[in-house]
Length: 228
Image (cartoon, rainbow, N blue to C red; front, side, top):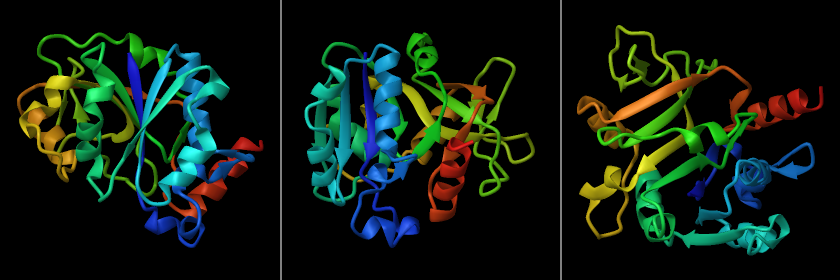
């Protein structure tokens, strides 16, 4: 099974830091964010990783190289224009699904102690095309994103208790089949909601440490946490 790290975002809310450095290379405890993901994925048994990039992406390529440092293979999916999350994954599908119809995706700008081996070992069934890791709602997303029922299926309901999508998920290639062969911009959230309506998305709640490092303030908070 392969994994993809999403690293193509511009990081507008992280400016001015991201004016000269792509967000996944911003450091926590003197180590770039993206390296924590690589190390955790390798520890979980992943040997091939695809990384998409756009803004200042050559810095990511130059810094990480071929993956030899971790004894893995890293491939890069360059986006000439912003494809958004689903569009970026869609472009990378030929690499991600060479030997397996299922793959892992993780946002490059989160920081967590989640153990990826759990989602790698999670089995999708014939009806479930995506499995999402949810977390308790942070202060910047108090209303959450998705609800979860007793069968671990996710759904949208404004009256139900909702949790926040962590940016960690496993997908089956068929989740993206309706996008066809043309590479274009495609946001992920509408696709997830549509798939939830058809009962194709499951999930689980992770209660360990997780942070969406989307602002300078939250980057400072994570650095403070990691130094304790």
